[in-house]
Image (cartoon, rainbow, N blue to C red):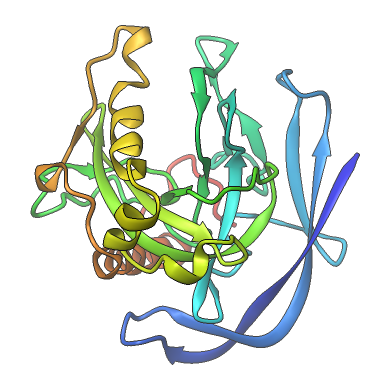
Length: 264
C-alpha cells in the first residue's frame, strides 16, 4: 500500500476570512494519510484517507481553508487519463475510478493539468444560478492546478486561487476553479487571471478548449461556458468557493436533502 503523509492546518478560529464567510484555519495541525488499496485500472482500486489512524472523508473532514489559501485534493494527476474522482455516494468518500455503463472511465486523451476538488464544497443541484441559468452538478467544486509538477492522486496541497471558468456540461453548471500550488516556482507571480496570461500564455485558452472538446469522442456535444466564455477573476472565484461552501454546510446540517450522497 502506498502511503502519503500530509500536514495540514486544522480548524481553530470561527472568524470569517476577508468577509467571505469562510472559516479560517490556523495553527493547530493534524496528519492526513492517503492509502491506495487494490490495483490501478481495476474496479476495486481506491484511495482512502485517515487522520491519525481514524478513517476520514476527503470531502467532509479535510478543512477548506489553509491559512490565507486553500486545501485542494488531487484526483487526477496531469498527463494521465484515468477518470479518478471522490466517490460522493460511498462511505467515507474514497477516490475511485468512475464507472460508466459497467466500464472504467478514461479520458480519450490525457489531461494536461492536475485536476481535483475543494473539500467542504458542493455544487447544489437544486439552485439555479441567476446569471448562468443552470443548476449545480451535485459534486464537490472542481479545480485545475496549473503548476509544473505532477501531483499524486490522493495528495493534498495548499493552493492559491487564481480564477474560474463557468463550464456548462450536460445541462449543469460545473465550475472549474484555476489554482496553483503554493510551492510551485511560479506561485509567487501568479495571483489573478492577467498573471496567468502574462507568465503562462495560452494556458487559459488551453483549459477552455480541452474542457470544451473532451466529451466529443463519446458523441456528446461541445461543452459551453457562461459569461461569454471569459475566465473570471480571483475575486469571482473566491465568491464561487464561498457559495459552494455554504451549500456544503447546508447539506451537512440536513437543511438540503442528501439523497444518495454520503454525508455522515
